[in-house]
Length: 415
Ligand code: C6P
Image 1 (tube, rainbow, N blue to C red):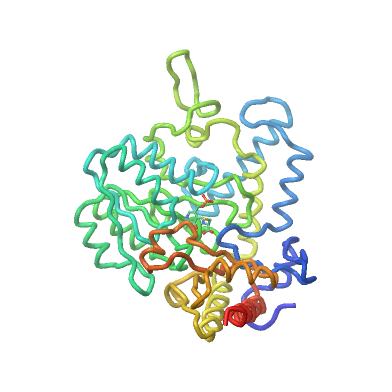
Image 2 (image 1 turned 180 degrees about the vertical axis):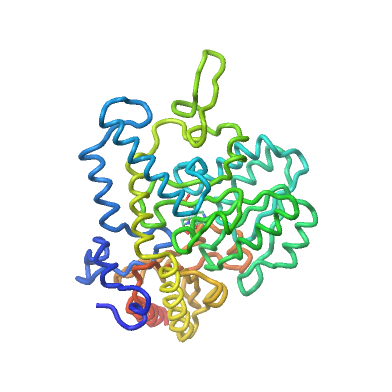
């Protein structure tokens, strides 16, 4: 049963009823408290059901067969693409490329656009708050092509250093690549403003939307980025599928990433002609059931409303910060609630973050501990690791209360 804050914006009981796993009891005989949605979200019944229905009634390969099942499967797959194009307000479904996840989407840009367009000495501007997915592909490319990487620093408050950003833009980077929302600090970066400044400086912009697309209304026309990458599994959809949005003209000018079936129009023994967008970037049999599952996830999120989801998370994160800061010895990283999404990373003095997470697990609370695939950001704050609680549309304030009780227990054990 939910209480005041939880029901301010959303009908939380109705939402939670859609997620079977939230009713699974732990060894303690109570429902699990899942505070690890930044790692992966839980899935509503309509996503699980549509994927089972696909395998029970439609399963066939797509874009190949001319039999009824193949036609139906192709139609469902392409309908999912259309839903996603609508969800992010792309100009056309040709701008929606299915990948395995955010990581593969960013690698696609590094390999295809990066290899074809960058030359020795070119500069790429990243930030200190990037997930490894938006660092390592560029490091690999920089080593191969002798590129120059620069990083917008992060302030003590957990925001990007704007003066440094403007300063770096004067050096005319070819690409600015940044996360829309940090998976550690929760910082929501002012994406549209950053894109506008980067474009004025002549750079293209890639945004890592892994943590933003699930929680904020992301509109490609308003944000204006050239590339935007996200993963289904963090937005109520299945694992194994992600999206690269790219501006159509840009994608059309880029060489294919992987070679094989479906990405070609014609093949001869010594040559091939690539297919049209979006198929040019989708070699081999794709994750068909997963794309359909992502389509259902997008329907679900839209039925609740992204604005409402964000408002709910703001209330939950404000409450979480207020409660956590009451606990002596807890230090929380990242900006104030107005500038952040539903992610709270913290340390508890004298206790290793892994011990915190392990002890919380014994009382049925799932959080993540470690560097969260953002080692340079942890180095920036002189931290080997943090404990992270992350929230979603199904998170209730009572779960925050249980987290706080759990942390007091951890303190007791280590005192
Ligand atoms: N962050 C977390 O616990 P993939 O693995 O490709 O779906 O997403 C990668 C990724 C990229 N950017 C950001 C900002 C992310 O948060 C993630 C995934 C998870 O924080 C798993 S490490």
